[in-house]
Image 1 (tube, rainbow, N blue to C red):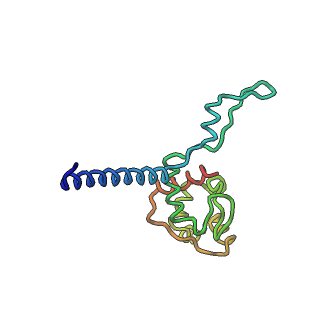
Image 2 (cartoon, rainbow, N blue to C red; image 1 turned 135 degrees about the vertical axis):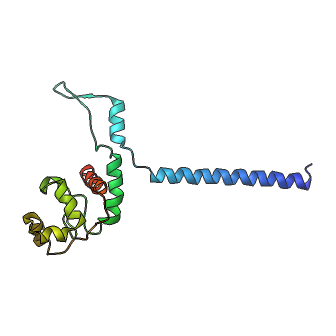
Image 3 (cartoon, one colour; image 1 turned 45 degrees about the vertical axis):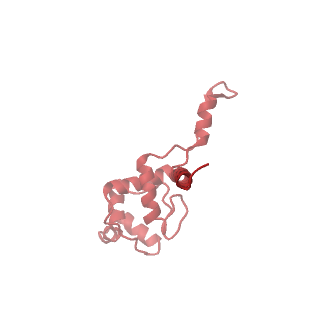
Amino acid sequence: MLSPAQLRALIAAIYALVATVSLMLVLVFAVAWLMPQENNTVAMASSAGPSSTAGGSDVVSSGPKPMSADALAGKATFTSLCTACHNANEDRLVGPGLKGVRQRTPGDAWLVKWIRNSSAVVASGDPYATKIFNDYGKIQMSSFTNLTDLQIKQVLDYIDAAN
């Protein structure tokens, strides 16, 4: 038979073990929740190998590509700063949908200026900036002067990767 002191020590050890296992489970679930989703379509296609078509050529299914680290960082910035007015796809909100924004604007250097301070770009007389400003009801876009060039590039990379 166990003495009261031994019983207390045994109960304390069991309690510590249960608390440790519970904490580990919470951490595993938190990490799993926060990890980016893997692309199961690509993984299944890779493990199945190439499939033959009627013409005899080998074709591998390719789903969406996984996002780069820059695109993932850009997604976080986009989600916190841009989603109130923009979609990453072609759907319009307050401002335009941003799918293909790099292809339809004067370039990344122009986009950096526009994102940092669109009002200054419009005030400079830039014809494309003036057109966008007028097309969207002369609603002034928020200025993001605190974003670095890298952060803006990451947001643009996310928009590209999301489409």
